[in-house]
Length: 505
Image 1 (spheres, rainbow, N blue to C red):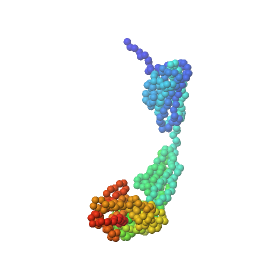
Image 2 (image 1 turned 90 degrees about the vertical axis):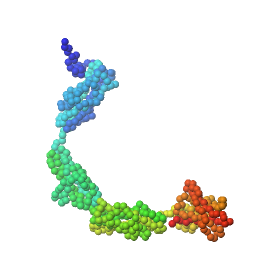
Image 3 (image 1 turned 45 degrees about the vertical axis):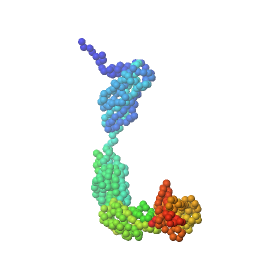
Image 4 (image 1 turned 60 degrees about the horizontal axis):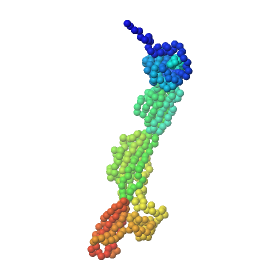
């Protein structure tokens, strides 16, 4: 015996057939809506996402939602949908049904429908919903969407042409246009070397970029480009090669200039080295370049970095010369070199010279670089303890002056880390006897490397000598050292010590 199926149509079809056959019950607090954030459609087709919501005051036993798509529309999928839902690609009538999983106070889901290109007229998406129990039909306001008509075809037209540009040699610049048309035009930049009589297409690369874009970029304009004109040709399906107005590029040559620089401003009394950088800047690439530097007496060339092939020999004194015949930098050429100077210099030391640029021939004076003698450690100590008037008066602040009258000249005060304006008692050397030796002990700062300390002895205060004196450091604490000088007692019933200091050469 063959049994007929319980339902002749799928469950959801039966559900909706019952629901929409007639109204049962009263809508009461139950409502349904279909919403979207889209109001207009694209002429080229696309998708629209809708939100379906059923709100209620109680707890339903089942819910249903039905949507009628316009012709040509298809269901593309959804988010948060009930288990009974359309198959992807469904057209016409779409149906969803809840038999469980209801939200508190409302149930909602999103779904997306795709539409074709070329639609015309208002597109209406109709919907209805059902709530049970009791069974209630819920009317839903339709969603209407206006299609966007494709703009009428139009040939290219310019609302802004490229502007003329005046730039210094070596700098970059841009030319831009604003063009309209339907469909959107393509662009091609061209140049003319004969004031617009003939035109050639630009090639992407080198100094030019954006040759098919609305903005053309010139990376580094040379004087060779001065007088060039630039324009675009715009093309679309309606009309090809519509020219823009042209723009004139003027490139002003940069006058060559030369500099000599250094990051140092002083030289050390003990001698040392300084490094300088020589630079020639120009607009047009030269055919040759030259540098000449005159050194002060006692100074010499040690070597350099990035120098041209023609350069001085290490140890050269007096006049130094460099020459380029190739390998020029873009916009400028430069190199660094190191000089050695001797100890014992005094006064300002000036490094001067000139540069040569050609073609055309131009002699470029170099502003001198002046090095002042760096203050010695003793001079720094003086400046911290004497005012300007006292510093100008060597009888008060000089190395042999004794402004506090304690018998210690300023150089000795500096050597022992004492104060020159306070008569010192503490911190002075001490004489004693230990075992078979006369002992002379004193303290001095660790950092007095610019001084030479000598301990001498005498038996008559007339003749002094360091012979027989053992002089050694015996302790160091923090920034202070303790030194001891010793001399045998034998043969010297009486002995005098003295400490002498002098600046190191």
